[in-house]
Length: 399
Image (cartoon, helix red, strand yellow):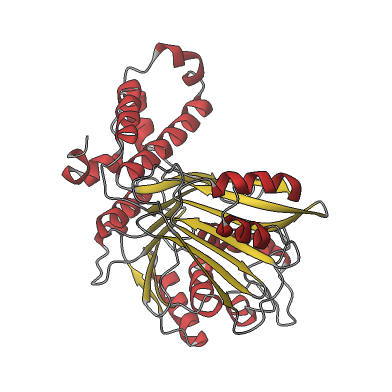
């Protein structure tokens, strides 16, 4: 591997004093490629410099950390893949490599207009907050998380951690690129106390400088009235709140991001269905109590091999929860979304700690693997997920 572009990429990525990040995207004409994107960034683990390689496909993303020595070999493996675009950023500028239709590497280097800060190597998520008392004082004070003297209230520490973890998980989707200067519409279904709704608005508009418009939706009129007053006091006219049911919500502008955190039972399915029908770029939900599928399981003739497991009430209930989210993730993949199920916040913060993250990457029904997995799962458990029912013919035509 002695091409000029590979030598330049290696020099930039392996320079621990200046390297910021590298992004590999696109597929060269006529080539097969397992990953839709690979990202590399420096991190510090137990006081030692590492490079984190994050691999994204249509289903999930996988991150692995390597020492600088190990990273050299891993980088060669990535460079050998037929990516069409390579961007490497360092403190002085950027290196861009694009491949023509004939496979020729076009290399360009750009100096930064202003010096770029050295990369933050913090791998400790508790210390590397997105919103802090320093950069988000007004918002944190307004929603009752911060005291007037700038301290996080003792009884709000968990909520503060949850907010930052949620924003980190949104950031990790890498789905917000391309919105610079364009309106970005977001709806948060079942917004409840709206701490996360306010946080997402603050993050998108003030931290990322997007022209973001966020709507929080909930059934409780008293909460909605309170949130409207808080938004008014903050002067945030791009944040609004509406009272109503998820399935009844209408909008003239389809949201690019749909959020539903701890919406109860089938309300999560209603939110996912809305996002799919709108063609939203990102759908993020953290399911709450889940009963609908458990009723079907109790009435179905379930696999005999599962008898010892399903004979225990608590295990039966948890299996119903797991199966419900498995079906949701499978349907999202069939409908063209790269989907993963991850831990939202540590279990000590909340028992409802799973999050389904989905990013639209293709047209629906394009991957036979997801269709076959879904059919097999239905045949085994002899149930029909609520999400399939409410999507109706929109989904049935792909089965």
